Length: 280
Image (cartoon, rainbow, N blue to C red; front, side):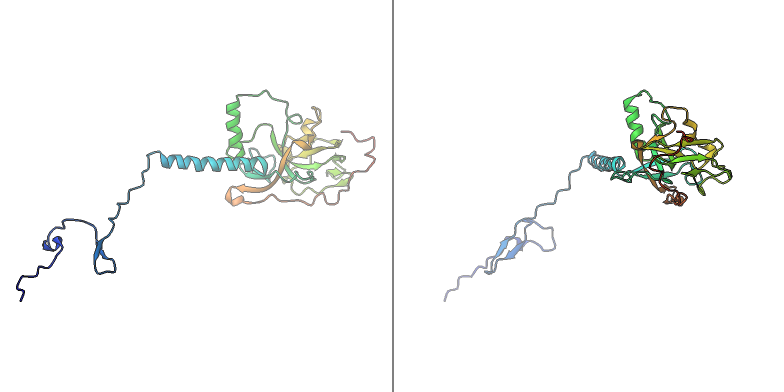
């Protein structure tokens, strides 16, 4: 009879006190299906993401730059905000309003119509050509104006179209009303208490030109004030930036710019033009 003691193989780690501190390998042993335990691969510590102190600022700057670029492109081609600096269009538009100008309104064959509120460049019609200033300052101002954060250029104006190419616009008839192609116009958008015009005029609008007036007639410098200047106060159609369609700010004034049917009964100008009594 074999009396030699049978030694049982044990893991060296089993000799340690289970209640003591853990020693040896930190890897776990998992069964491999054959009854033996194989050491598992040690877990790699997850490294914290290395972030430099300027990385978040760079990311913010990139996102901000992309947003500004998008807004500038949008304002250049589609919709541009404008800040209303004066009361010449009251009560329709008030000082401090930020309007959104639809720059696509006249891009596809459409032209400004009577009653439209438009923004236009008055260079050559309302103001003379100005010498160019500091290009950097001008670029910064143009960017701020494009975002509606600064007043528009001194050459940009917002007025209402009263006459288009071929129209005869007269003020005033025996009842004190403005007429277009001999039809009286009920201008309900004009500031309460204002007359259609304190300055009499009788003009025929040349082709591809516009006769424009402010709704606050007593406070508006418009086509009437430039009758004797180059262009006779008429605005070239190709100088129109777009149609003012929305009031975006302040929030309490958020709305579309009200339309008008004041010119609904006005006929097209006669094919042969108006009589010799009219001038423009």
